[in-house]
Image 1 (cartoon, one colour):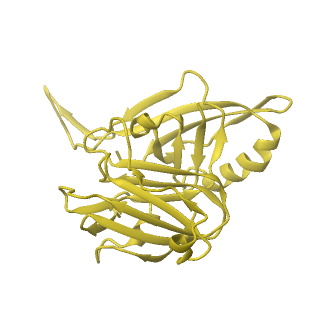
Image 2 (cartoon, one colour; image 1 turned 60 degrees about the vertical axis):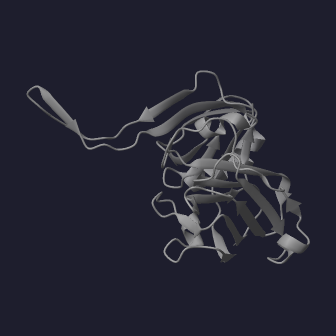
Image 3 (cartoon, rainbow, N blue to C red; image 1 turned 45 degrees about the horizontal axis):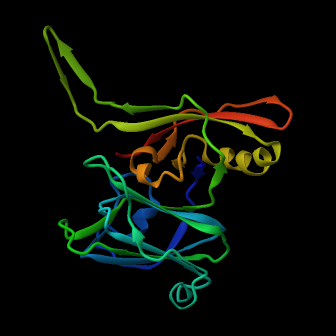
Length: 256
């Protein structure tokens, strides 16, 4: 199955519904506690990006599986409604199984690279028991695609809770375990490596969080396989033979 990696593009907020202390601009910030929130059951935002993209993802939301997300793209903010170049229609926020307490992840892919710069997102959550809509991060970017990850990928739940011990006792300051995925990608062509991977790796390093979907087509398992977080160490790239590059990466989620 196809694996994708997406580095978030910066965006400017054009308009949007938001609580006074939870602005739309928080969707462009990485600390998971800086969320965007809207009181009520519907929300709309419009943002502008500066370069091409093909992926829009809403990370860490409180949306239920039957809530809806609609993405429209246009040459102007008004055109996202009057003459969109892409319209996902209202799609379910997610499907499959999600861990209790974890934020939801919604990934919407355009059929081709979008040249238009304005993105409108409409959310519907009728009857939501929280009485508000919330999300941690908006990821808009151009995905790097690879045919599949290699066998023997690893998933770990990293528990960083500090412990204290004494004679016959132990105690913890409890932190929520974070999902971490380690995977290798092989048989990357030289053309793809030099044109896509080198700019990507040079940009993200270990400081820029990325969206990593190891099994893109398996939508029902996105909630337990997709990770938005930092690369935990520099990605080693090997060049074992002509026109072949292999790399390995470990990505740890910023939040559950």
